[in-house]
Image (cartoon, rainbow, N blue to C red; front, side, top):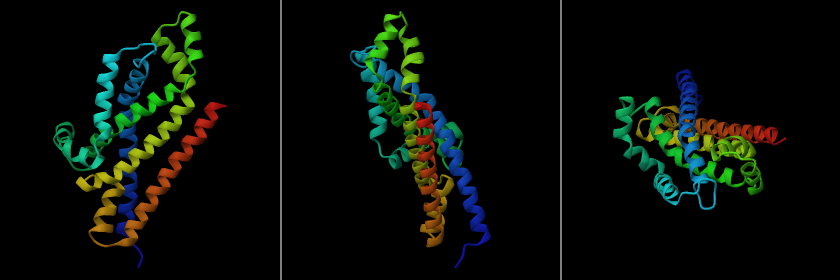
Length: 218
């Protein structure tokens, strides 16, 4: 039995909502996570802004947030989500926990990418009299750009996966449709359609990241 026109339109709307959640949550997560990742990298032992206290505090925050399963984080953040958006359900509300859940992942991924930069490049920048901030912005970040782009593709795909879980607490998108129609109403064709679309979206994001990273590396 085929899907009704209403279900098809609902799935189309679900794709749009999922892409909106993924885009805005990823953007906000990088707005916070990128500076945190740079701070984690720069304040580590023997690095250009080595500071044990700052590194421990930022690392503790990142590790605590990262260690919480996303479904638990969704529930814990309901009061905060309601405070920020005026609601705890829907597409806009889902962006809040998605962002908070993605920030520590982004921070660690950025730290890891920056750590791949050769110490020789940093030494050369320092010997030319470049300040730590100038070294980070003009030497370390450009050098680690291919790795950062690959990491971004992984992070965006992770946020996309998380967005499907947001359906459990009334979030929008494909996850809510899969739950509402595929699970509660036993409409297996809807479940498999939404799962297939999610898999395709993840593959497109990953492949796009690979292509862009290769071009930047060249």
